Image 1 (cartoon, rainbow, N blue to C red):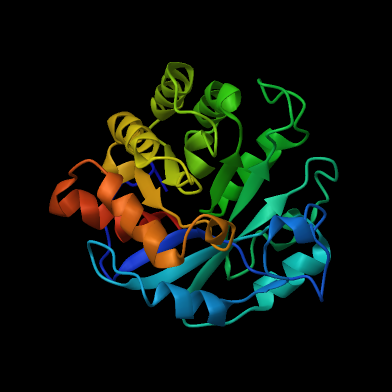
Image 2 (cartoon, helix red, strand yellow):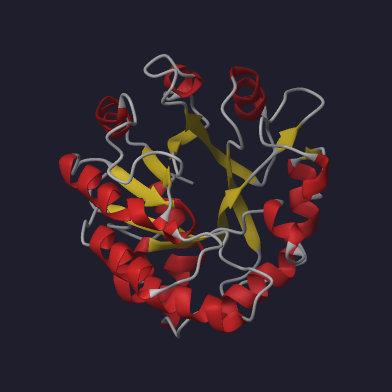
Length: 280
């Protein structure tokens, strides 16, 4: 696949590269609790209704990538069986405890699966305790898929090291490696270190908070400086983001907080890079 975001940027409308879909009546989510204020069912039809109210600088949301919310086999089977015009692909979760026989390993070659997410913010900063990681990266890279990382800021340099060991694999950092943390100088330096790898991109997802948007502007400015628009992707993090604001407001606040990207940069950030990386 080459460098992240390399090659021709396809047209065809905006892409939300990070949403979650679930049905807690069909399978359990270990982290799900009623006090979180999240719906028990988050389905593609609901996503389509909410995203239809949003307009990005390149037009309406035309496609979405669903990222597995937990790591059970029942969830994988349900998610990969979903069919909806908006749903363009699925990223399944890697379970390092079960590696290499995790649920994701068995479906990585499925037609709807576009990649595997390594969600390890609770692991060591150097990621040395994530079992089977190099094997996973080699296998997904050979299939032309994407390896995503959900990590805390201190782990970002290690993600860059992993990317350097697997130059033929495309990597994507979720939530800018930031999430709800403060975009301080330590995070900015770690993000820049990771971005030095040309086969690594990042999602501007999960970074809209209830705090003042100067924080969001700071985070997006640092990300654009580190990656350029060609290696950044928009993600709403719906329905997690619905606790902060409606879908259309998440889009609008992200657009307002971004540095000026120009027409080509807007095309890449809001859809083109996601279309290239996830084969939309």
